[in-house]
Amino acid sequence: MNYTLLITASPTASRSGLTALRFARALLTRGHQLPLVFFLDEGTRTGTAAASTPSDETDLLAGWVELAGDTTELVLCVSSAQRRGLLDATAAQREDSEATVHPAFRLGGLGELVEALATSDRVVTFG
Image: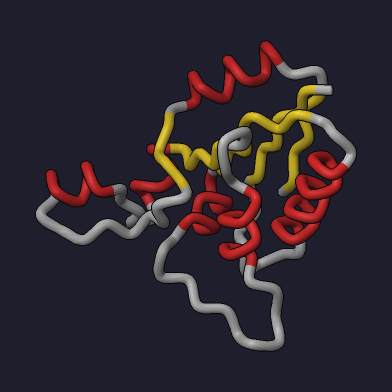
């Protein structure tokens, strides 16, 4: 089955991000396809390169980075990310600033989410 995940919750304000990561791992382990994980609103904070996780907590950023690869893309909503100060290399250069998005993630528009929704068998939202 082909799944799309939509994550809207802050990685620090709830356990939704951890639940989503565990769900994504389970999908892939069972042979399902997960071509896109889309982070929207506060969920875009998951992709910050500046994240620092206390040693007694699960490192969500590392978990998503490990999960991403040839078959799964991690996409941050460009508008949500920019509102939260998250810039990829292109936007950072334009703003004469530093990139703040982790390289395993990329910025994308809601159109990509709509396309993924149209081709998915299941869509699961965490937030």
